[in-house]
Image 1 (tube, rainbow, N blue to C red):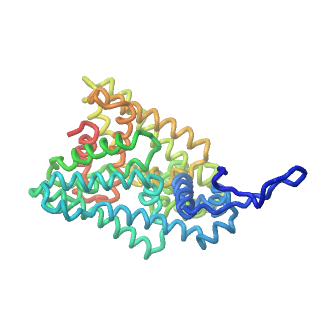
Image 2 (image 1 turned 30 degrees about the horizontal axis):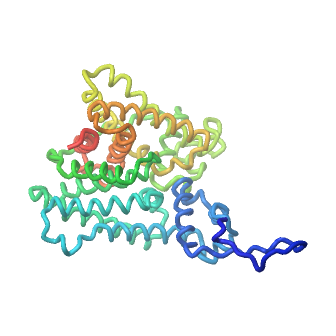
Image 3 (image 1 turned 90 degrees about the horizontal axis):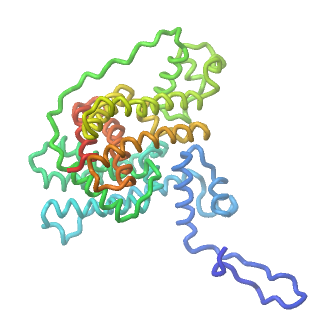
Length: 410
């Protein structure tokens, strides 16, 4: 505690006991609680954090925390909707820019949205991945806030690109919002002004993408797994259930039933538990991405060619395993801590390999800047997949082009 936040009842004199300290409550206690809880929820997920955890991180008692918030949910709900509201406020165009050129208006909206996202980076993680744990009315409000942001972006993109259809404007706006909010998916650091400049340029590059016609793409059918291959069948059924309902809401018994096992105890012949299933699926996904880099580089004529190959392979693999791609982003915090460390190391090395190729193509960028762009490109797959699923508007070919715009620039 700083000197400014303590005082004594009286001065100590020789022989007197030490003066009693009286702690004054910080004037911004609610803001401190919000920031601490956002960081905790973002790191461990809504279900992985208790009020006691938050109180301990703040250095206060649980009773003191409950004086501000009646429950963990109240804290969670207020913080998500606060940031959702801040994002909607950020994209409102000032009256004095109403008649400005379309590019100027779009740049202003982007600058405000990016600044708000940076200021609220930990909570944006919750908006992206934990909002589904809101109660129905609150989730509807959060979704309405996000729709307002997309419509505001759409107004400016449509003015800049009047030839685009309403659907294609929506595709570009989702891609832009994905790139901006992707900073919540990782912990890479850069100065604020550098992040603002980098994301703004990436967003403008996305707004300029010439989308090909939306043509339905026939995705490969999932490989049939014989009932006798319980090890593989458990993995697939677990991921499907985690995707549909969220990891905390799925039991080992339900996974066993989906895989055709008679009892939950049978699962433990193959995996140590539910989190072990999650870790095994994630390890397979991480190895797929990391293992593609070497062959792509070896078979390519230069870094640009290798990067194009990796983009196509990444999109194809992600589309083939849509559920796993989504679960990897939403449920990572439920993997055991030691396995999270392993997975993060694999991901970090993969991102660094992609970033090295981007630096070869764009030598004006720093290593840290290219890592930000790689994360923004990866986010396109999951966000466009969430928004369009099997709709041709979000086809693999289009996602590849959007990833390319981020990595290669305008």
